[in-house]
Length: 240
Length: 260
Image (cartoon, rainbow over all chains, first blue to last red):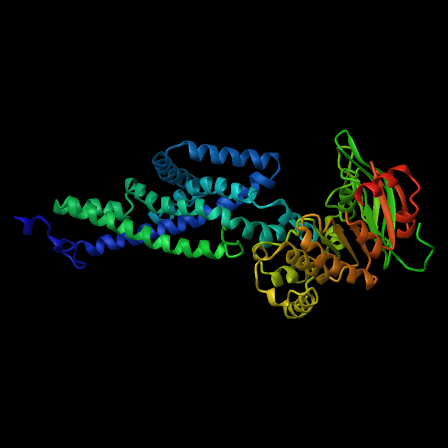
């Protein structure tokens, strides 16, 4: 009996094995994670700068953004942005005389994850910028740097070591948030795993395989994060 | 007052006042630094000497009064809260870029090597070609005895080395005048000498500088003019021999005897 419990052949890359499908799902998950995370970083940088340096209106808008997005469960946000967002876009397209537009699952996924990540990244980056010693920025001003040049040459690179632990967390969360897109039918790793398991009834095998793939993604991420962190902290003396 | 000279005015401050809320820190200070002057500002803590220095390059905006760099008045306008603010940001940036400032706590950029710190303002603010800035930066680091440390990050250096690097950074912008804000106050006693040595050499070259300091012996030796601030006004000023040898005001006498 033991020999038949696990049918490793199901994981073969070529059909009838499902391995290839699983890897394609993983690839989709990574694409969404990278896209959403990048969008989140851009939104987060803008959000943090808006909260710290913006006028009263900008500050309030940023506050509303981070509060709302962080208050609502991500699953609800994904359903809301995906279905309602598509609906709004289609109505707008119809009003402007275009036909219905078809939103790709990939674009929608990146957008949704990006908006969610942006709200959290705003707070991570805001805290990191506040941790930059005032003297660093004062020296930039004293040497005639404009606010934008100061941000680019001093504030952002100087805050990086403070931001990396928080940003690493956000990256790992974003890789796993991609699983939520299964509910809108996007063929990422979790959805294809469910399909494979359902079709073959080998639930244990496929969900463990998916778990192993997520673990692998995390381990590789950790290696890269460690490298980036060492580089960002190169100017810091080793703790004595 | 300094003797009448043909030398141009490097920094001219007129009737400068600065309030923080209800507290008036500077109560109308006028001071002119001509080219080649080495002016040391002394005074007790809370006398407003650092605030005064920081008003010269508008790190602190005055509540009233005026500042002119090489005859060019910094344009100021009301800030709506009873104080002043620069009305032309670009003018302030342009003038600041050629006032080499040295801070009490060094304020070297921690994510850049020493050489990168030195060439940062020349390359990114003044637009000097990188190769030229590197060459000049290395020469300056050699001059302050840090050439071997050019690729090291600031936090790996001693306070004295960091401050010497900060002085090289200030020299790299070919400053019209240098502003020193208590450059040795954050240093361990045994490191003070090496920094004062570098500043003393610059003074001998007749570089225009305004120096806020607690080092009385040093001020006496290098300064051409001493300004004693007390409670936000210039209590007494004059050449070092007069200030230290023949102080007139009671406050200055008391101050000198207390720091000796």
